[in-house]
Amino acid sequence: MIRTSRADASTLLRSLTLIALATLFSTSCGSEAPGELTGTTEPDPVKPQLAVTYVGIPYGPFGLWQLNTLLWGPKPFTASHNFINADTLILQINAARSKGQRLIVALVGGLSTRYTTNGQFDMTKWRNELNTYNKASLKTAVAAAVTDGTIVGATLIDEPETKRWGTVLTKATIDLMAGYTKAIFPTLPVGVNHGATGYTWRPTERYHKVDYAVYQYVYWITKGNIALWRDGVLAQAKLDGVTPAFSINILNGGVQDKTDGVYDCIGTGMGGMGTWFPLCSMTSDQVRTWGKTLAPLGCAMLLWRFDKTYVTKAANLSALTDIGTLAASKPRRSCKRVV
Image: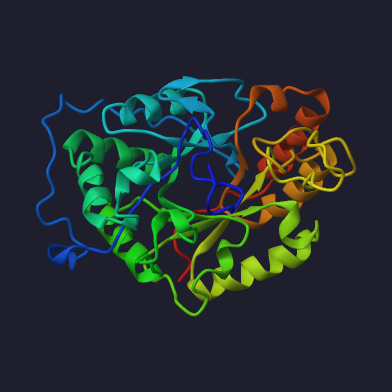
């Protein structure tokens, strides 16, 4: 998932626990090529099944899959963003393909502390985790899934702009991570997840190898003025040469509840309790309006995050379905880098 851009909220529970990454390359990491990639022996690769056709813009929540099991639906969703590991990647790809679902995969995931040392991003730890994917069967499966559209992209890091990664991350560092990943999976689009303010992170630096960026909207960043935020994001994406993808934080992105001293998320612009004070869920009207504004503009449209209680509420499901109908009607778009 993408969090609500509160940097100190790194303990927020998320079933997918997105992507933890860490400090600068050690002295042996100046090259973006894997060099001494290591991988364990694996059985013969599963033969890819390519008889599948995807249409429209991929649309769905973070965490819809638990390994190779759908938690719900999937309609109206056609895609999702999920944490995965090397041992179960092929299972998830084949299960998603069989359901006509598309994937953004978080290959290196878990709590950020798995990939930090003394509070700073540690590239060696991140790289060691990625090395577990250096297997012929996974390369074959990923290449096939990219070709037929089952895999939309792979996320390198979640919210590099936040304090949980320390102070050493730069866009150049993330480009090195992109190059390292592409040395294993040459055709795989790779990207970064940014929170609501993330598009302003290191604005004078540029991505040169990152393909896409996911930008997530919440009410408080522009007091509901989605057009103002959208225009700022699109301008920065153009400067960075990345293809934009979008997300809205349905669970924590509504009007915050901090005016009457009682945290109950009952009030104008509040769609129910968020995951911690003072955050509130989006209302169904906010979901519909903001989702339909952003969905046509990117290579994917995401929601943070899957919550069965929220999505099965009739008004919310109606709004989510409306976004899905719009996304399905738009031309399919690659998440590959635009320049």
